[in-house]
Each structure stands twice: as structure tokens, then as C-alpha cells.
Image 1 (cartoon, helix red, strand yellow):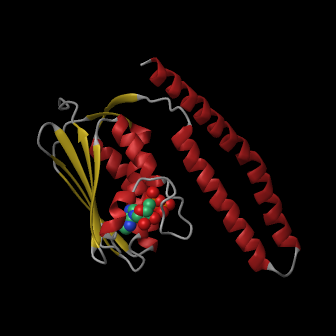
Image 2: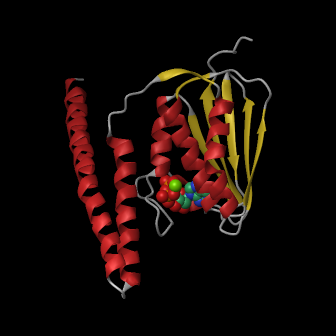
Length: 229
Ligand code: ADP
Ligand code: MG
């Protein structure tokens, strides 16, 4: 028993150090990006190299940010929220990206739903990650349907369904492990963050997929209580 406590302390020190390092990387990164952008305007050729440098700097920045979201001991602010409005909010946030990718977002929410007890920003982060993945899975467009309904045993069910490239059966179990990504500019940290947050909310995350026909992600979260009118 004692050993378990010591181990978890060691882990948290390592986690804190890593988060600290990630944080320290951001300032020099910002200055590198600024000077690279400046030089690009001053040098008349080799712009393709500057573009690669800027894209790679952005990539480091995304990795560091996503890593920090994982490692940082998060201050959780739980309160009662309406899951439908959290989803509406995320849909609005991603509307431009969807339109640019020929993706039509279709929502189907049950009229009256219990609330969830949650950290609103963390849940938003989950749905942003999942809907972004869905949009990215449809390079030539398609429908992205988002449904919210009540399930059994006091659970609320959010379903995010795309018509994208799908996930091969043998890759399904790799989802959520760090750095597993099939995208040239992916980090493979998004789903890990989602999983972490959903578990902290006593929920579950499930993937069903059919190659070249699409993926359905199901998030189940415990209902808190009915809002009184
Ligand atoms: P990233 O998006 O940076 O690659 P994620 O952790 O968000 O990292 O996702 C990991 C991998 O899971 C993706 O690279 C992709 O291969 C696969 N994936 C996730 N969601 C979907 C989806 N809706 N359709 C197809 N593949 C998906
Ligand atoms: Mg992602």
C-alpha cells in the first residue's frame, strides 16, 4: 500500500516537471516564430523553407499545448450544466471549419434532458477534439451528425457520427494511446485527453467504425438532475 503512494508521488513529480518544461518551451517558441515570420518578409526567395519552418513551429506548439493539457494538474470546476448547450456551443465554434471542408453538421437533440455535473471547459475540449477528428476524417466533405439522448441507467448519450475514412479494425485498440496518429500534422494526443476527461467525469467513450464508410463515437455521461422550470 505504501509503495503505491510513493509511486504515485514520483509520477506526479515527473508529470509536474514535464509540464514545467513544456511551459518553458512556449516562450522561446513564440520568439522563434516571430523572427521566422520577420525574416520571411525580408528575404525575397526560399519562401518554401520559411513556410516549412513556420509549419513545424506550429506543430511543436500544438504538441506542447496538448501535452500541457494532459500533464498539468487541472483545477476542475464542477457545476451543473446543460449538455445540449455545451454541444451547441462547440458546434458554433467549429461551424467555419466544417463549411470550409464541405461538412454539414446535423444535430438531433432530445427536447428535455437532465443536466450533467461537469467541468464545462473540459467537456467542451472533449467535443471539440472529437468533432475535429470527424471533420478531418472527411477530406471530401460529408455529414457530421451529433445526437443527444437519454440512455439507460441514468446516462446521457452523445453520438458523433461521420461519413469519413473510418478506422481499420486492428487500429481501434490503439486509439487513445499517446502519439498514435495517422495524420501528417497530427499529435495523437487528442483522444488521450478526451479519455482522461471523460473518465474524470465517470463517463465512457466508445468507437465503432467501418473502413471507408465512417465512424461513430459514443460518449456516455451520468445524468445529474432534471432542471426545474
Ligand atoms: P490526431 O487527431 O492528432 O491524429 P487523435 O488522438 O485526435 O490525434 O486521433 C488519433 C487517430 O485516431 C487519428 O490520427 C485517426 O487516425 C484516428 N481517428 C480519430 N477519430 C477518427 C475519426 N472520426 N475517423 C477516422 N479516424 C479517426
Ligand atoms: Mg485529433
